[in-house]
Length: 387
Image 1 (cartoon, rainbow, N blue to C red):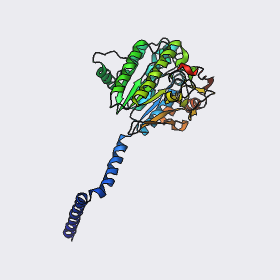
Image 2: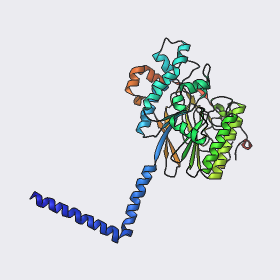
Image 3: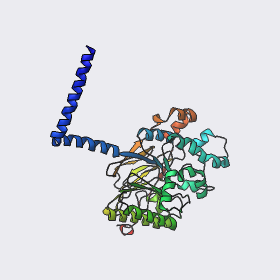
Image 4: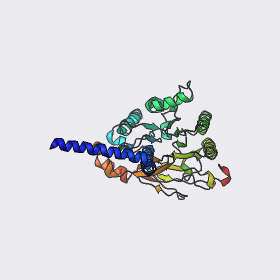
């Protein structure tokens, strides 16, 4: 009985296979749309990928960043991009002081960055993390050299080093600005942490990177990440408008990006933090003609003391403060990118973090870590900027 059953099953499989082959041979036009649709759907699904961005994790980042890390990992992001201000440096971070109540300021300066690595970067595990430098990384006694020495594993990671040497085999100098190319997108990290930026060396490098991206058909999109927003955004009062050098070089960089997009028809997106809230469409201001508005975000929501939103939100459709979280970027098959703010609330703080810092400190960070400082908007005439 069993032998007979198996023989019948085998016969059925063979006949079904023959029938399928005949259908494919005799009626390809009938099956083609279904096969093609399945192949296209699978290809499109495989091409969609994600990355995550936020910045400013001083004050309460030891509590907030582990929650962000869990969210980023659950979202399946390919990497996390931190846009600067790791620790306060000018004074104790509240989360650090909770664990080290008897520290001197000298002890804090020695341990603040190792604390950032242990509490804020390690939760990402093996997920790649890219760092931008913020202005608090340059508060005395810290310097650019200190940043590179402490964070060499990130600023000179294999991906960054490989790209730097591909651009110039003789360039062995680790910098706080760099770029890497991933699946048709050129990710460019800029350094505007100090009032002397962007300096001539960085601008020369940036111009060269854009020229390569313009002539490389494999690159279809450019994403810029930096700490402070470029000049003349809705957050102009806390941005590269803060010094004459920053304002001039920032406007030069903005124009270069507008010209790049206009001449190549490639996508350009600009990400920043520095202001401690979340806003999109930050360059849609009177300083920029409609055809020169770059898609831009501020996402300074990784743990720093929260500011008040500007009075004029411009054309922002997302404007939030007193929140923590990150922006999840989803890359479509054509390398256009959509952005979604992912909120991290108190109840998602990992249990281990609650146990280490205590419920009262966690509660304080979500309820009380804010101030009344309100960022002013742009004041420039419309003729000042890129068109």
